[in-house]
Length: 119
Image 1: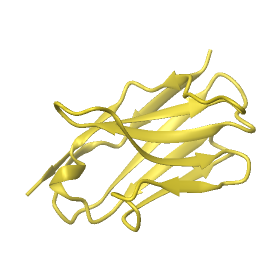
Image 2: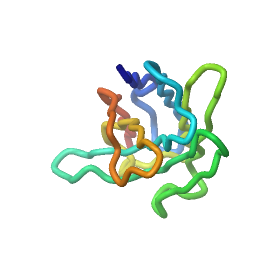
Image 3: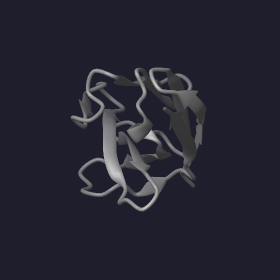
Image 4: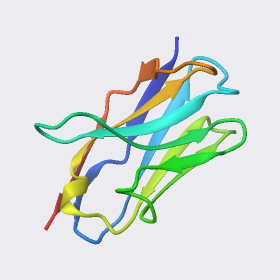
């Protein structure tokens, strides 16, 4: 059974940095896409970034481009999200998710980790 476990959230001042990690287990993820999403209070969940497990292709939402960096550690089955120059509007619960090859939707989700950026 696929499990995704996020860690690394917390409270940081505006302009600061945080590093989130997502530990994936339960199968091999060749060909899968790993994504990060976030949901702020009272708002819909939104896409943040993704990386393909096999070749490391990345894609970012405009709101985080140039500030956030997604990476993967194949040996540890971990996907990381380095968040720099954080803004109060980055405050949200951050979720990692995985999408099988050829699928249009993300099938498995983590429990989320809270990121709070104070002004």
